[in-house]
Amino acid sequence: MDYPQILAPVLHFLRCPTPTAWIDEARKPDRLPLLLTDHMVCELKAAQTAMLLIRKYIADKPGADALLAWLKPYEAFTFREGPEPDFIALHKQIGKSVMPKTDDPWGQSLIDSMVLLIKEELHHFWQVREMMVARDIPYVKITASRYAKGMLKEVRTHEPLTLIDKLICGAYIEARSCERFAALVPYLDADLQRFYLSLLRSEARHYQDYLTLAQQVAKEDISPRVTFFGDVEASLISTPDEEFRFHSGVPV
Image: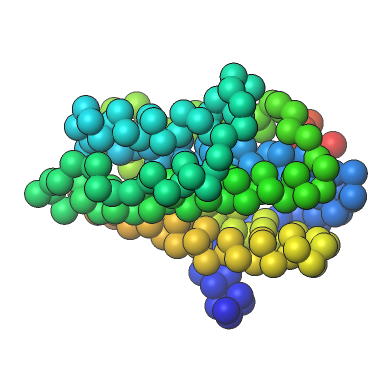
């Protein structure tokens, strides 16, 4: 796999690289439990975001119920409301077969890309969990970072502009994840290096899927909004941040 080729469009899309100060903090061995924990939760949040988009904009009642059922065991474990499930068995249940058929090309594109994203993110969720178990890292609930909230509070409040902005935010979150996986690789053990490198291709595709969906649903060029959210995202990444998380800014 040509990692520089995969990363090139991601690095071009983002308006700043991860600050060295964040990498210096992230590479400390005692930060690994927090990073892996937050990474695992972020994978669930990415799946939840995709689920909510399908449920709100295209799914019928059976499809919406199926989406909720897919995520429920992961959410129960993450929010400490249920036991650790058999993630491998759960993963086999996820597919497009229960989703509604639609004559709307954009709606079908949303279903196709977001169901695949959900399947991949939940797969990554239990892969991170396996890495934690192998390292005797217990799962402990943590607070969320300011990152996603900081972007979503800039989302416009009437449709279809709300949808367009949410899709652009999704693109930036996926692109930043991809960039940070690559930035961390030199400082990880061999197993984690292989795992994080294996994530690059899917994360890079996810950001492009979000951008494509945003442009398809918009009646005009989305470049100004992409630039706007790029500046918002870069500010969150490059300014001092009280909390250290996978998507946090410069450690205080």
